[in-house]
Image (cartoon, rainbow, N blue to C red):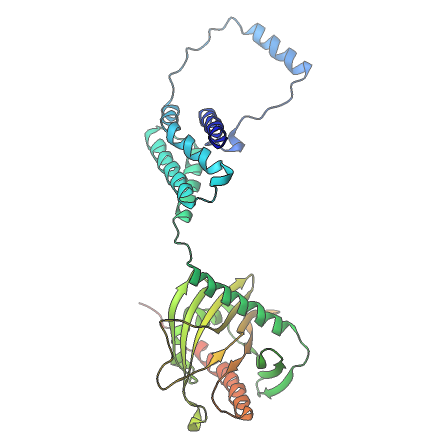
Length: 353
């Protein structure tokens, strides 16, 4: 039964290729119109008046037709196979079909003296398809990191969306504000609300594209290193915190998965602690945990050259530290971050010669 069905698929694909149904886009196919008595009578009369004209001699088959017939055996089998329901999940076969069709279309365009526009369109689309099929799929471990990043993003946004229960921790003279809230399943979280006099793209570029340079301008960070990039949205990082004044809190480090998303005019940078085999606990550092945490960037309403930044911070510093000290250190860390970020963004941009 399977063989009979595949043979029928091959026959249908063969007829479609010969008729130009597979390669030719639908908008270039002739439309079928209804033919009433008036149209049929007009055609009959037209044929009667012009029947004495000599018919043009038959033209030899074009190069495009000949090449299409040459590619028929291999292409028809591949098209029939990938259209069969039980074989659609065979990635290798889909890749082979896409690459074969792309190669045949390229040869067809080169041999034909004047290929029509639809050949170029189909060749371009088939090349894009074959290149996408050739992309390296994510491993099971990589998918788990992507899932962790998405989870951190969703949890952080849910915390920020709930406006109830926030208490003021610190209000700076320039209007920067730190709020806090205790959550049953997370603990105490801190929320920084500031406005930066820089456009969103500049802030986003500094926090994402130049992530590893954060230790150059933020005294609370000793080093940020990207351990692995997964796709275009997810990275694994190792961060070392700088010692606090008076060494109240000893050296801490973090291994985090970070996820960055841009949706219209809003950017979200989220993260949480994770485990990474290539970065075990370091001697002289206490491995702390963070997350869910995120930064939300939006253009200030009515002033698109300024950016509203909201930073949700959730950290477990580990060790035996009084909560009053932890709360003071974390809230001050957020205030200091806003100050140093402004200084970094306000620096003159070097002009390249």
